[in-house]
Structure formats: structure tokens, C-alpha cells
Length: 444
View 1 (cartoon, rainbow, N blue to C red):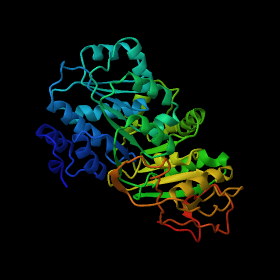
View 2 (view 1 turned 180 degrees about the horizontal axis):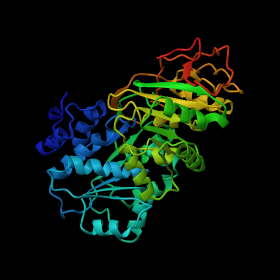
View 3 (view 1 turned 45 degrees about the vertical axis):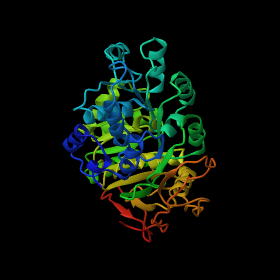
View 4 (view 1 turned 120 degrees about the horizontal axis):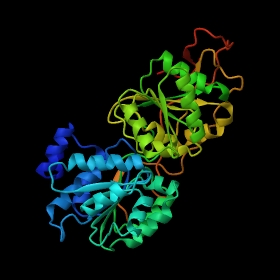
């Protein structure tokens, strides 16, 4: 399958070619024709699957194919949960729409509102927005939805997790009843299905991969370590393995700041991004990370969701997430677009419950390795047996006809195993600290 076969117009094919893409991803193959046909879409797709182009390309085609009643009146609204994702979606709109006479803008909080108002007053066909700032602009009379034709809710599950459901419902009441709706989510959780019943009309349901399956190209490891030694272990790994670009996840904002400071003191260029950072600081840190000026970017889950970093080689879970599905989103930052990647989790004894929950969600045990000189005084207990999912199946595309709330939540059974045997000699020593696999565990 090629992009030419998807029915895209010449200006879009030209932009896609200039971007360097030759073959559409599975989500694009399934979603683009359905959107072009005017259908509502309910799509489950993880980050890194090409879902953004899966809705941006057909939206650009639909809007350019018909003349609006009034030029540059808002015709398509794309709502995202975070500032970073909004900026990246807008970048895709600009990139793929460069040869079309359509105008777009992006609005989000954390920055001055006046430049956004100026952009809106010039007229836009496509608006990318976060919920809070969109409502602010509506209440100030700077945005109207009278001629809206297409609505996109991107990463709907994250919007629900972040407490945006009330804002979303307020926005939906402001929109024209007759419109095309596209909903993208990493999972088809019950809350998402409840939301879709009020939004989507006779939708095509697209699921390109089991919702909680972790990227097949990502090698995943657990490093048992005492909590007090986690920073030292991370520094050891970065220096010993000469990591030049690593994304590290912290559970808290304070923890992200503290870890970034510890890395800096060790001579490793690092920066933290989280919700308390200004948008300017977050943008600067991300730009420095992409440019190679910052080796370690420490992020909380909310700040990191939607980050698009090409060929990120490794991800580290400094803290395990409380919500096991967030582990899937975290490691999805690497192993993207066919590239391989590695994910390391520094796990202390008090995180065994989170580890068990993660392994149940991804349906596999994670390989254990140890770092010489940092073997834990308090060992991480052996993992509990993995509980089989009640429902499982293959990825599919089919029409959605009032299915039960729990239907369609498929999990994937991986091939990994976990070695529990410890090395016999675990004396801590200051020199020659190198990581090694546990005897009896899988090595890759």
C-alpha cells in the first residue's frame, strides 16, 4: 500500500514525499479512507504509530476539496491534552498542508493569550487547542464554532486521566450537532466507550494493535536497586554506556527537579520538564534535548505525553508509575517508526506492587539485571504470577455497533521471562561497577 492508493490529493502527496515517507502506517491505511468517506472514527492507537497524520492528512483533503461559506472560518477543531502535543499536531498540520491555501493556529495555556487572539482574528480553518485555553478564548468571544465541520479528540484517555472531562463536555455543548467526529485513544477503556456513546454516530472502530501491548521493538529490563541508590545508578549507566540522549521518568515534579540537579552536579547536562515549569522553559528544554545539548531530560508523565523525539534510543523509569498503563505510554517514547529501543526501570523493594501490575497489563515478566556495586540491601521480591486476561484477541478493524462497555479491551502476551536467581557475591565495591544480568535470567 502506498499513499497514492489512499486517495490523497497531489498537494498532500507532495508534502508527504518531502517529509520522506513512502508507505503509510497501519493506522493511516485504515483511518484515512474512513475519514475521507465522512465516517466517524473511534481509533485505538499508541503513540509512534503515525496516528497524527492519520487524521491530519484526510482533514486537510476534506477542507481543501470544498469551498467554505466564509473563508478562514473555523472548520476543524483538534483538541489535545497537553501543550507539547498541541504544538506537535500543529506542526504536522503546517507540514502536510504547506501546499494548500488553508490557515491554522494552535492555542494552549502557559503562554500569553494576546498573540493567540491575534492569530485567531486573522482567520483560521483548523485550530489545535488544549481544553482550558479554548474555553477561555470562547468566553472572550475570540473563537466561534458555527461552521465547524470536523472535531478531533486526540489522546482522549489522557484527557480523562487529567480531569478534562468536564471541559470536554462543556465544549461539546457549544459545537454544531451535525459534524464529523474523530476520537483517538491509546485504549478503549470503559470511560472512553461511555464518552463515545455521546459523541460518535455509527463509528468505524479501528484498532491497529492490542491497547496495552508494549512496543515489540523495545527491549525492557528491571534493575533492582535500593531507593537511595537510584540517582547513583542512573549516573553510572549514563556515563558507563555513554548515553547521549535519554528520557527519564519521575513520578513527581519535585523528584524531577531534584534528579536533574543531581545529574548536573555529576557533570551530566540535564533538564526537568513538568507542569510547574513555564511553557518557555519546557520548550527550551525540549529543544536542547533534541539538539543534543541536553543529555538527560527528566519528565513527569503529564509533561512527557505526546513528546515526539525521533529515534530516541533509551527510556528510564526512575520511578515506576502508579497507573500501569502509563508504563506503556512511557516506553512508547522509544522504539518508534521501526527503530529499536531499550527501556530500563529502576525498581526498589517498595515498588513490587507497581511492577506486578505492569507485568499483568503487558502480560509478560520483565528481565532483571543488576549493577555491580549497587545490588540492593532490600531485594525486590519475586514477581507474582501473571494473571491471564479475561478477554484477548487480534488487532482488527470493524464497525462499532453498540458493543458492551468492556468489549474490545485486548491485551498482548509477550515472550519475555524473568530471572530471579541472584549472583552469589553481591558485596558493594566502589570500583569496576558494570551492569550484568542476573544468573538464570534472559539476556538480550
